[in-house]
Length: 266
Picture 1: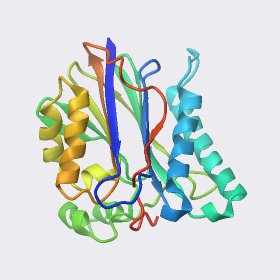
Picture 2: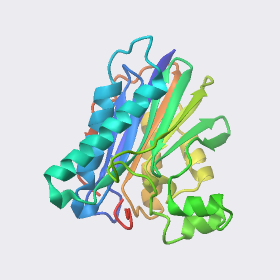
Picture 3: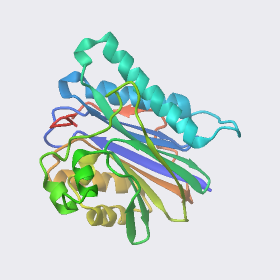
């Protein structure tokens, strides 16, 4: 089976620059979105460092003895270390950090890992399923039954994350394994997408272009901007069991100038 993937990042309509970054590596089935935090404390530096660490650890040949969850956690630990080291060297960067969501695809199996509130979804036919659980203050309140999901979507604290790369000497990543079916789509995104669009709108928009992933990414970004574009927005669509290879997709980290708390800086 071949893997198809495309991605797009945009600063949105309100942010002065883009602190998101993304990675697409078809050769090794590695895909990631990082959403930098810190604004003037250089969130774009943190997201770039995270993507580069993921690329260096995961975007290379693997040994049969390598356990994928261990490799993924090694990549995330390395990303966290590089951000911490940069803060030590540049005190003006104190307070910067980044969320991270990534997918590693091997045949029908794939692994999803995340830190923070960037998300992974699986689109299968007429259904969309969120594969990650936000590491955020309001999601914790939802989990405890203190807020409904509808209330959480409007809560002014919704951008406050409880985990991020760069926030401490170590970070705990959630890692899950999934099995793909033909026609499945994996969507990775920064919260600039899901903060503007509900799940059903994301599903409907992605499905209109599921045979053209590049068009699907453009439509998702355009829909987020049409809904207000309040944040940077980055999306990657991956078809694990695709029927074609998109050789135009970049395989290097991508950051675009454009746009903790993530309190207004995300």
